[in-house]
Image (cartoon, rainbow, N blue to C red):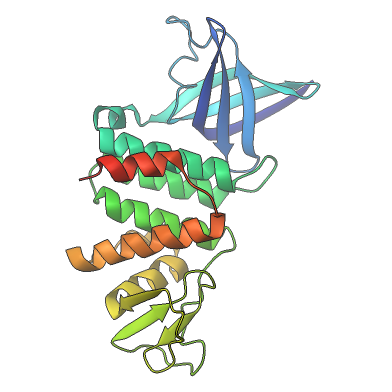
Length: 247
């Protein structure tokens, strides 16, 4: 029998019978861990809160053959308050779906876990608007996952900045207004380009520490979402729901 101890965030939960659960936990060192939690649905279970969606806990897993089970789970942080706000909960569920999409088993995921934990905390504490948190999280996730757009300078002439820059969503290449090809995807103000550079290239501690005008934030949010969707080539039901109910 193998024993594994790791802090992790519950990103999926599935009821099994009347008392058990199958949960998916995003951990820093081991990526996704799928584990059965026996009796976790019982009201008196010590694992009830720790194995619920959006719980961050210290887990002890045991593995028998090819199956993990939750031996122990001690809550470190819970984000259950988000459930009282439909918009915030929808965004949190979208983050969980992204974690499931981009992470794997036995895969180093420390920075990605840290990103989602910070995003959930900011959402919980009303530190930033949901649209701001969403866009920063999407773009940084893409950068961490090997899909960072090439935002350093114009692809053709090397111009660092002009009043407007043009981003090809599919290639992630940037162009100045003099070199933009006929099939460009997005015309973006310099403030949006600066924000994208900041999120992609800054130290982690700084990525949420800036602000944008309402107009720039709308464009920033749109381009980050479009870029992520272009690279994943799939739809996210949680994102579709969020976009329907958001303010």
